[in-house]
Length: 119
Image 1: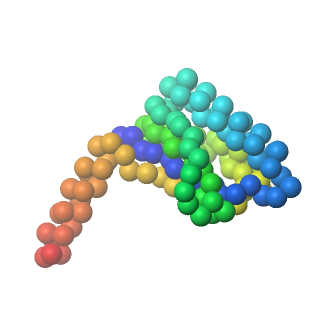
Image 2 (image 1 turned 60 degrees about the vertical axis):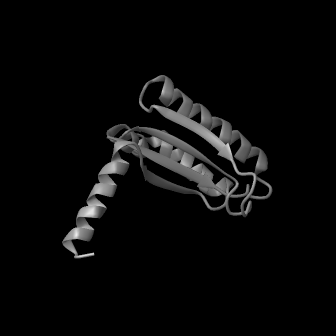
């Protein structure tokens, strides 16, 4: 089963903008390499045009087999990039996403729970 990883961040920390931009490029290359290695099936960076740009400036979405995503999340390089991000950008978050067939599984489970609970 595939899962997604949604990594979002806010404004760059003042005085650390150049390092944050370098980190963006380093992170982008890291995930692009994971696509080339076929560890993940999808990766794309995004910048927001509308939002509270202090809290939400941009995000990365990646998708792949759950075991590979979990493996990446434990790799030293990923942990290092996230640690650098925590110092260089505001509001750094990483969330797992339900994607693909998992959406139908989750919907089916929710329907069964509603029946069991009499709703």
